[in-house]
Image: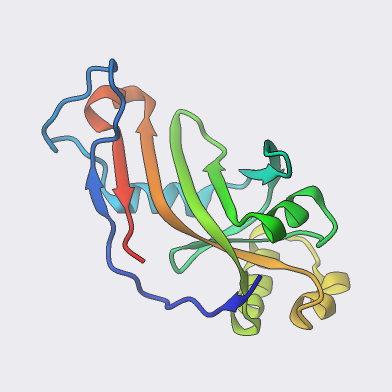
Length: 174
């Protein structure tokens, strides 16, 4: 998997209604959630769910810690972990925040973060989780172990209290 340097600014995603036939969603755009709503929940979440694709193909879901940073979800894992091996073979994945009542579902592609992004990741990760990454830092910065940057292709926002009127889909251009 190639290392990619992500641009820090991407164009704002286009918002629309998700295709959810039978749920009675309005056709109008009135009530769509702003992109800032999704980013706030992705930033504040403590735990995230990641779903990857095993060989076969079969899904694999696990809880991870990570960061929403400059429009991407960043997390580290061991290269020999199931999710690490899955992403090495198939970069498609889904990330979800921990609060299903204010759900943000990110469908994206994983790429290996470059060293500059890894430095920022380590600094902010240690601050967020109060977790000492010192024993792993050398291997992470030497690119021996992966830090994945997942950029969204499509994101869904589902706010339980106003589900029908606020269900939102954001599409990104690459």
